[in-house]
Length: 360
Image (tube, rainbow, N blue to C red; front, side):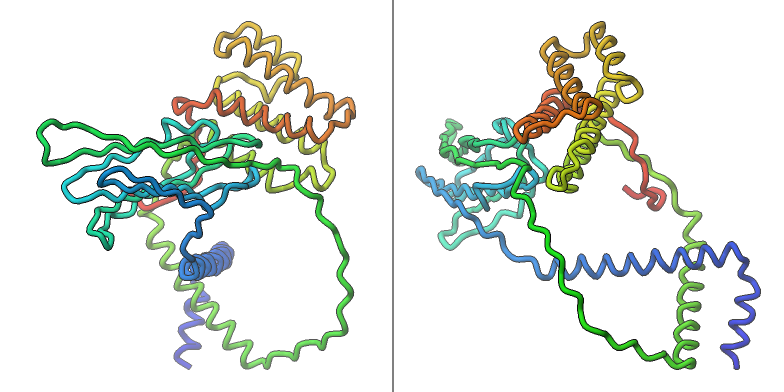
């Protein structure tokens, strides 16, 4: 009876607008708890990386390992590169600057675990990188140079240990076409029994209590939250859209025209974000005419853009059927143009996150 009276008072104070808010909050809370559970499960089940390549180099007190988890991947995948240096006590080692020597790969993220001692009492330093390819083809990860010196010596002389290049093959996004099959119809399934009315009432009551409590907490914390503006470089936004295009696999589905419409739109918006040229709102002819009078691009880049846009228009409007090689070349041209012209200076407001006031 007490619970019944409390529920009547609570329901009397909640307006129709609050009902909508409570329902939305309950749905969001359910999704949030599900995602948190997924992340914990994935973290608990993660395994140590298995490396396909583990090359060892030695010079004096320094031993170096260069490890790769794979040497063949698609353009939509990434590879794990691990550099490990073990040096004797009394010596200092400087890890190579990977970003200075990479040409055909970009660094997605990197991690430096804490130094440790191995069984020979050597200090072990490790750096792990996740790399993504720019274009398909056969490449080499370059040689890396490690520098070390005797910390107790007064002459400050440095020594070098250089590794060897590693061959890596990046395959095209145009993989094998999937074999589509229709599964057999399953047998007759019994209808589930009706839940007793008492159990339904208890479940509904618990849901209302949980949602009401969550909504009350939401109202309490609402005032302490503010919108934080987030900015990203134009090239990062373009790369995210290219990855989404690959994931949708329009080529395998035979949606060639849609593929060309999207990749043309990706490059046009990148040009607008990066160079402040209104490419998306104009026809190809209007944009190319404006491009002739701007100095923000080199003559070779203007020529590449013209060929790219004219080829896309042939497919979109003239019903031209490109070959597999032409489709791959179109994708590679777009990504190559973005890579050549990317800059950290032009950043776009992609604000869509609310956090507590004062948090970072």
